[in-house]
Length: 160
Image 1 (cartoon, helix red, strand yellow):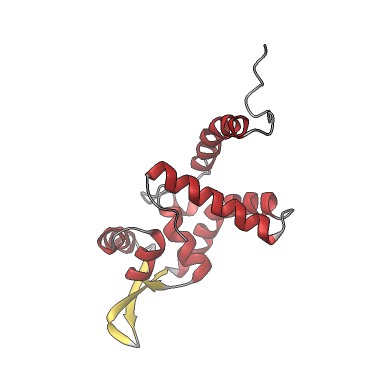
Image 2 (cartoon, one colour):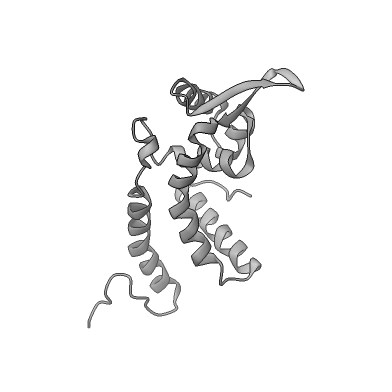
């Protein structure tokens, strides 16, 4: 009995699909981690862990520490420390919220927006290419499936 080559889809059973995904996921993660940091950002101590924070700020615009913490699903103190470090490096800016001076609004510094967009572009382009042929319901199911997988690995409830 021959074993299918890694990456070659097998039958349609759940176990076949699990096998396919167990072989695929490490390659996906490995390739995503290898997306190079753009030249304009290489002097900073940035890592793939910063991409989620940058994604929210780039796609959704400036927001508060608490909003970022809720979206990233981490404690506000964790986000605050991360933002403090990135602000000291000049990558992020913090300013007072005009509506409530107790709150701070976080944004990508204008001089680093293009570099961050360049860093996110290969992943965004790959997702657009993979998701474009799907119907909206299929895209939602794909994302929901990944969220359910994440929750199952973490031993938690799926998040919305």
